[in-house]
Length: 77
Length: 398
Image (cartoon, rainbow over all chains, first blue to last red; front, top):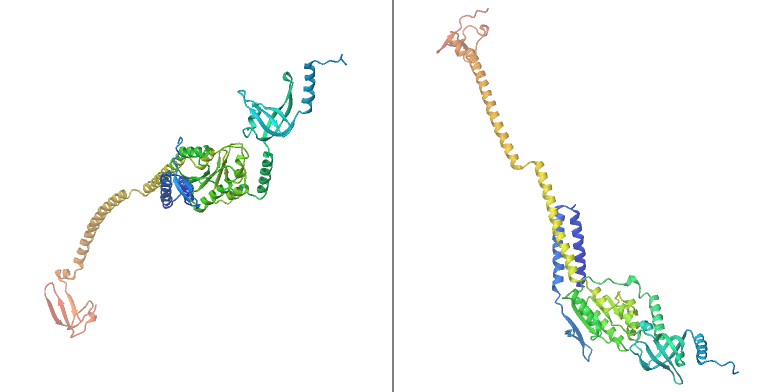
């Protein structure tokens, strides 16, 4: 599922940063890791941004299929 | 007999000892009626069955463990002792614990189901799945009205304002609840629209929560591919759903806390990772750059090197010129010497001093020895200026 991407991306980013901080890499390796790190960070950021915050409630009609409808939480929000 | 007359107090005192001694800790079953709960909070009621009745009281202090509210006409099982209230010559039941009749049966059914499912491995920790750190959408299976859904929404919105939530409304009590809950779980698993599920309800009695003890519900939770957080009742309530779920939250709002890492924490973690990424990269580049410049220093600055080469070439050029000059001078000297020597040896020069060069004709070889000639040979003699041809008369040997 999409979720795996965020979690694995975050974990991989952590890995990259630790490796870079060790500082025992060649220039090519550090550059390659750095680029991957930037890509992963961007991915995580978009994942955080893209949720629209919809809250839906599923309504079942007689024939049993289910349709979503926005759930406005009239009581105190 | 008269001498042995009891006062009322003595009599009722003996009755009290007798009765309280006889019934110190008993279980009684009956129906609640004439229930009154005055300001004091103590619950007074009559416990009766078809033929008789007894007065009873459940003091407020003993109501702490009550999992349900006493209601008129309710069949209950109670535990307590008999107490005699001497001033009014009445006896009553002083109760410590009351539970709805049949609750015991439910409790037993619960224990049995729990141990059976446990043996089957449904509760195995190994089977539990981790919750996603950042779900795209959270599915909630609970009653659309009631505190649970409101708490869940409030907490999720506080922690992660733009988290998307999909509610599948179900009855959470009564016989129609289990099938609906199962349908909801299957719906989410079919549509795969959410990454985590919260299943639960607010507090209630064992009977109220019973839907979450149904085996079918437990199996539906177990076979869900989407991780499930169960949040049934209060902290103290444990249902089968709680044991089977991937995570058990003590209350619906606790479930909301667990289901989503707060957005700021995620942002903070991401932010710090990003800055560490840039800082470590810059440090890396600085390290490499300084390594480069130190090696360049060792190598010497190419420009300086070029200058050095220029200097050297100049120097060499000068030395060359110098060497050349000295050479030339020396050679000139030698040359002069040689040329002087040459002059001296120069046959033409000797001619100047009256010598001549004789060659035998026609070969033209220079003659140095008279023996080389014989009479009649034609010889050509070179004088300082001009030449003479002559014939050999006679050769005189030394």
